Image 1 (cartoon, helix red, strand yellow):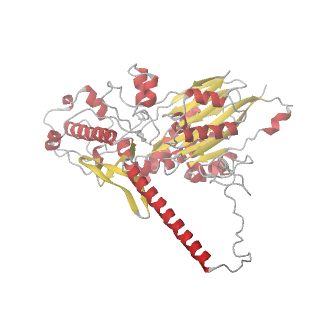
Image 2 (cartoon, helix red, strand yellow; image 1 turned 30 degrees about the vertical axis):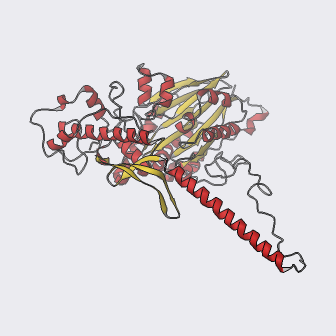
Image 3 (spheres, rainbow, N blue to C red; image 1 turned 120 degrees about the vertical axis):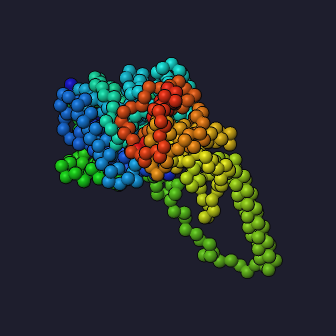
Amino acid sequence: MTLVLRFAAGSHKGLIREGNEDSGYAGPRLLAVADGMGGAAAGEVASSEVLGSIVRLDEDVPGADLLTLLGDAVQGANDRLRQMVEEDPQLEGMGCTLTAMLWTGQRMGMVHVGDSRAYLLRDGSLAQITQDHTWVQRLVDEGRITPEEAETHPQRSLLMRALDGRGQVEPDLSIREVRAGDRYLICSDGLSGPVSHQTLQDTLGSYYSPEQTVQELIQLALRGGGPDNITCIVADVIDVGATDTMSGQFNDVPVVVGAVADTPPSSAADHSIADTPAGRAAGLGRGPQGAFGPAEGYGAAQGGFGPAEGYQGDGGYGSPAEPSVYGTEEFDEEPPVKRKRRGLTASLAVLVTLGLLGGAGYFGYQWTQDQYYIGEDGDHVAIYQGINQNLAGLSLSSVHDSYADTPLKWLPQDQRAQVNRTITVGSLAEAQKTANGLQDWAKLCQKAAVLGGTAAPQGTQATKAAFLAATPTTPGEREKPRNPTPAAPTTSPTPSAPAQNATPPAAAAPTEQPQQPAQSQLSDDERSRAEACPKQ
């Protein structure tokens, strides 16, 4: 019995994000998805570099010690991120998740960090084979909330572990025995978030080819709102005998999608892998091969998974219109009265059109005024009314409430990055609740800095006056944070300390220290949450 992988990969930026920070790699031995985070801090760079660092694993059939290979590769990728931050401090705060599988022909080694996921469809039943490293998953494990509540929890993607170039990585490592007929799915939370488990199971079991399955999964995520970047890999385990005529039908050319295809990682320049299939794949930009690599029939549509639905090419939707023949006919001379009527009709048509456009513009503007989001106003947090867009050079939003007492420098790193990218909310009440939660975090972090719970941000002096102004309250819920540094809400019980992979940068020492060790003045819950506060 000879087992091989038949695979396909696809990626799309979604309907909300401005760019794609996901990266995906699928090869005959290595399957990997990395979900970048950090917003302005280059999440796409992090995901691209991580995949570029581990791609060499796809070159040879791995030995028996799969877990050591995977563990060393992930630590090397994390070290690469640390080196990049040291060389360019503007990259501070970038990071990514990683879920990868390494195939030997009989077994599958798996490494997992963050909230991207891996699933196994076997005998018609779909099982999630990774565990999310998130705050809400910890609450589920402790019995604080149900899995159903976790699906809609506002902090469901607050990460407790990620690759961020700090300290030692603590990945989940495991070995899985495979069977012919198994189907694996690796995806970012842009797919697993808006698409239910049951729908994933039905879709994975309904489509024969991985290419068709990937396209359908991405369409499902888009129909679910496409709130995040969407990246997925589908791989089938096929039993192909040495003399089987199907053996030549499986393509073993690696495929790269997402950010790693748009912006090849600097590690792809490593001459030791540059001339290998994996090295060439890692160095690819998005070319005519599209999201499914060399498979025919898929163009490089925006988002990376073939032409948009309904596009028929020549003669179809989007094809050039028939040439106008106006002016080629011969007309008899018309009485002047007809010309007047024709001119009057044209004038009325213009007026009606302008009226419709004006009405549409008015109602469109009124709609924007019912929208709110959280963003930065200088160096602090603010609630904006409208949408974060410009029309003909005019901004479609304005500051509704400015929170001058919520400086960005006092927010946990992931929340600061989220505010930088803006947090979309459904109503003014939700915006106020989110902003109040950020305000509470800023107060807690100021208090912790004064009492020794964490160092003050660079350029900030913590004083007793700041402590007196910082009343610790329970941070409220907020929109999905997308940065590796964890932050824990007070509405839930005290979690265990976050993973040790976040070594904070050093900060300027406070100008005034309590005369006695004051950490005891922080409750256990506050000390736990203060782990997410800015450090240096």
